[in-house]
Image (cartoon, rainbow, N blue to C red; front, side, top):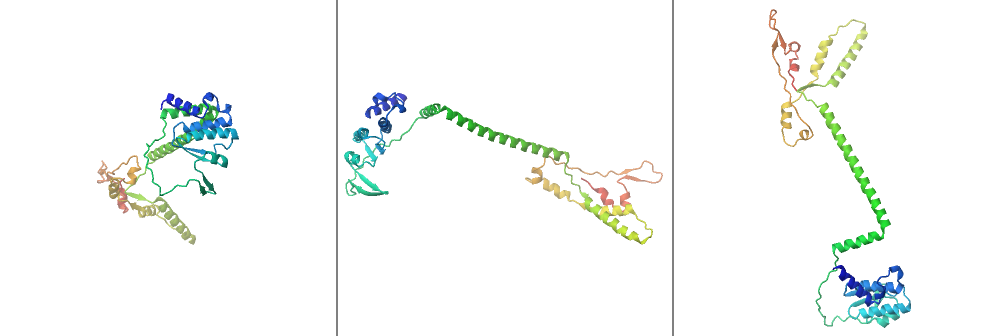
Length: 308
C-alpha cells in the first residue's frame, strides 16, 4: 500500500468518527472522547470484518458515551461489532443481541442460536493483513527518533556488552594460541627418544645403594675386605638393561590414524652402524678398536649393539 493510499484511508476513517478537523492535532491536545474516537478510527482503517470493542465508554461521560455508541451503531450496519461493557442501559439501547456472563459462565442470551436453522455458507475472500518491509522500517525509524534518549542509552549498553564479549573471546583465543606455541617449542627443544635397549637408571641407583648399605653392615666385623667396584657396577647395569621392540613400534607408527602421529610434528628414525675399525699398528697382532672388545670380555657384548 502506497503512502498516499494510507493517508487517504486514515482521513476517511477520521471523517467517519467526526474528527476531520482534528487531523493535525497531537494526542495530548485531544479530549478523552476524541481519543476514544481515534481508537475507533484506527480499528476501522483496514476495513476489518469484525470489530471488538472492550469497554469503549468506560472512561467517558454520558454525552460523550452516546456519541461513541452512535458511531459504533453506524459501523455495525456494515460490520459485526462485538462490545464488552458493564453499562446495562447502553447495551439494551444499542445492541441487537445481548449475552450475559457471570463468573465465566453464560447466564442469558437474548437471541440464542438455533442449531436446526439452515446454515448459510458464505464464501469470503481470505484477506491477510500485511505491511511492506520499507513501511515497517520507516515506522521503526520514526519510533526511534521520537525517543532519542532511550535509543542512545539502549545502544550504548548493548555496545558495551558486545565489546566485552568480543574482548573476552579475543583474550581467550590469544592465551590458547600462546600455550600451543609454548608446547610446540618445548617438544621441539626436548624431543622424545626411544632406543632399542634402555637402562632403568632410578632402579639401578636404588639397587646399588642397597648393595652398599648391606656391605657397610658386613664391615662391622673389624676385618679388611676387598671390593671390585667396577665389576659390580657393570653387572648391575647389565641386569637393568631393557629391550624395546622397535620393529613393531615402527609398524604401528606407519598405520593410519594413530594418536602418536596425529599429535607429533615430526618423527625421525636413527640407525646405529657398527663399523669394524682396527689399529694401524699390527706388531702386537690385530686389535679391533670399534666395536670395543672390552664389553665382550666382560660378557656384556649385547650392550654395544644398541641402536636408536
